[in-house]
Length: 385
Image (cartoon, rainbow, N blue to C red; front, side, top):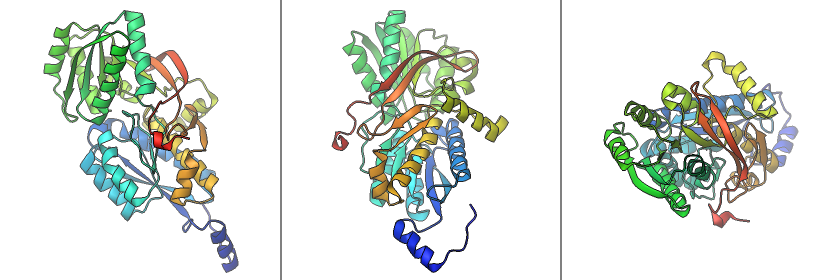
């Protein structure tokens, strides 16, 4: 952005029109797991952030201000998140936090967000019911994601018995608690439910229990990234061959798994095959920007891209970067992007179109069925209405 000298009168007039804006740069803080469990997916999240910032800056910024990204490694966990959030909020003094993170990292960072009164858009699918006066969520929750997989297994494969495997933290347990309830409410039975620590990588004992159980289908909920890779690789090596639904794998991670991912069922709010002008333009722009270095856009990176635009829309609606004004505006703004039109007005969560898909041999996802505008259900009733 090129700045022209302004007269004192012009400066005074500008400040009067937008008293909360005191600089020519808007800082967006991105705490993300560059190391740890999320290191497999974090690079795609950073790329989508960079692309959104480039588009916005090329178009003149936000209220004429340039967007600057400040990325901090949260190590995919609680301790790293505390350091990252403290640095971003109190040292970098970012205007907003927008991030895909593990639930452990999010939970550790929220007290700092609340204390610092910093707007926070959480862009990762998660176990649901995390609420803060300073947080909005634009990704899916169990009420939107579990049913398509379970219903398909019951209808297509006649599955009646299920085995559940997860990473032992808030996301893994929260997702599988909902899955167990949904399976049982629909006449199925859960024969086993086993967990490994988030940084665990030896699934041998759990796979043995799975094979001995005689279950009709497997559903897993592991930390996004590395645990998905190790578990799937070991399942294939052990000859496990049953309907397999993964509640945490994204299209980008599936591609990185190679042949091991073939046949996995997923339910996602984004797949690269969405046939819309917005998604085609997004993919073309990402390819032109990153070329051979492009990491497959996915259900963790695309919400990040859209959230940056949601923040832009909120600032423009408020006419200010004032934190409370932005929070109030986020409830009303909509963004039309690769996933369609997203509005975070359902108790600070978003109705989403969901896609049931199956990973193909080339890592792409074949869409089997879509479900439009699935409601997130009762998440944060204190923000209803």
